[in-house]
Length: 388
Image 1 (cartoon, rainbow, N blue to C red):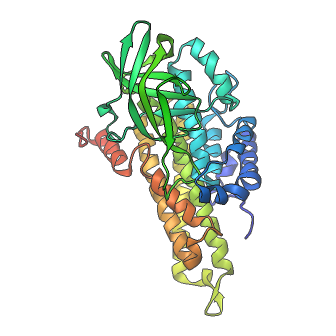
Image 2 (cartoon, one colour; image 1 turned 120 degrees about the horizontal axis):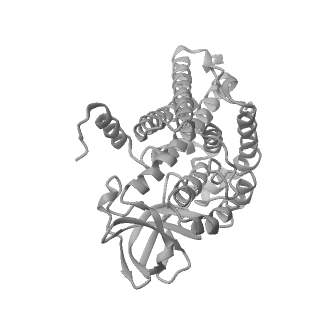
Image 3 (spheres, helix red, strand yellow; image 1 turned 90 degrees about the vertical axis):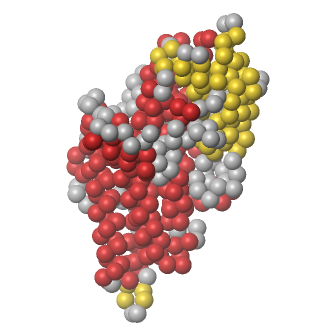
């Protein structure tokens, strides 16, 4: 199969700066040369390729759009391109970088004390400390305000009791950002995972995101000092702002998965012969390929404009919801069409399509389901809340 060289029907690469193009090319080569040769094996074993973490850090992928503290300080379009290229390899690669940077480093950067920033961010940028984000619970996903994890003050410490579930990087993490209810509302706590009472176990038997670590965290009266509370995050505004950052990365990442499926289907259709000619020459196959290209192109335009708004400080969370909802849903449709074009070959690991399709089932659900983002945008345009 021809080597992947991008999907750019509207010449959007011409809008990129030389630095953005260099970053895209660098991450694309990393994925092509180091991730893709091993990802199917790790997917089969339900493991994350941990040996890639130092390389990701070396490339400046952790907290790439944060300023200072050892971070790369890139603009948000460059960060989006990183997510796109990583997810072309596998959603697990993008999830790892997204959780580390947007869900763990960002809240320390935005809401932490200077001491917390100096202590954790440089080590996290180097990949020496891996973080996880503890918000979702077994009985509270779309409604995090119903969380049951609680923190009570005990002298100069806080004692945290509760369970978090579906936590990416959970058993890899050295540091967990745990959101818990206190007498003063929901607060975020930086919890070192070697503290007594903290335990994590992997969730096995997944058919999706198999090359990603997904865990359950149990906090059994875990004591942390007052200094471990994020001073600037009060209520759900803190975790929601983190999710906005991560969802932005998903908007771009889903395009990477869609591009991988489209590229595979296009190359396959040009070489697969039925009834004495390539199946790419049949109308129904061309219809599928054109649909795939159309949706990728529209998604690219959404993502690029979203990146401009983010860099200009004009981004609204509802705009991210619209793009996350659209790009992930359409990427899933593209993956399904690609599987259809490949026929029986669409379900084997020789081709990446089924892996991307299964991964996108999770991406369509986590960090806000398709339906929840529909209602978020609906509330924004009507002024009426249909969620409650």
